[in-house]
Image (cartoon, rainbow over all chains, first blue to last red; front, side, top):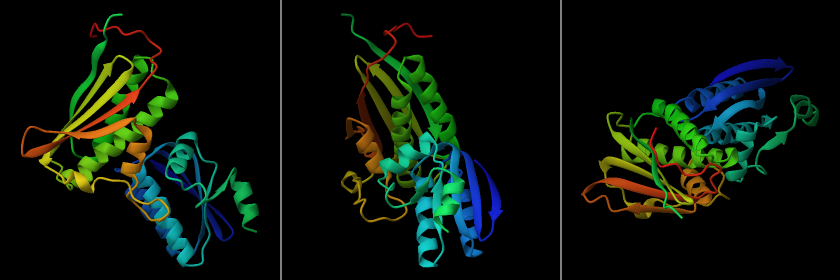
Length: 110
Length: 150
């Protein structure tokens, strides 16, 4: 798994790419929580995710809950087919704020 | 019609997270070679990966010296997956999906497995230790069965 962050005002867009599994999800979790602890609103670009398992989903859920309890925004954008499949399977497609593009995500958050 | 039973994979892995990427690659390669369609391969990989995670995290509880065996068998219009570990026997009654309305990190693996596979059961390991998980999925194979091993 690789990640790349881009700053846009109060928002940080973090693009996660590759395979997010039991081996790599601890790093994804740490990156997401570190951004939120720095009081950044976060959009996670999942367009480059080739595989994500339940531990990767758990990292996203933990970050969402941390964001909610700290008054921060946390959304997912441009989900790859692999990410869509697993988020639907976990019935989390109505729980996360999902956007087609980073631009859509930024526009929706005002 | 000739009966087709073909062992696609019989391979041992260490119960370590860094083994999973290679295991998924083996699954993808062998299923694609049999003419299993891409969408179905994706589903099977998710289910088998989750079952392996359960072995690593729960059966062996992080003991990375532990090993488990993956068996993949093409049996007529079914795929049979067996995961055999040598950890202490788990309490099978605790292996059940949780309520997904309770949104929280973790606990999704059993739900994934039961949703994606047609049949999931623990077999008798024949010993006081070890666990044997068998999962089945009906498949319309695109390639005819050739039982000659490569």
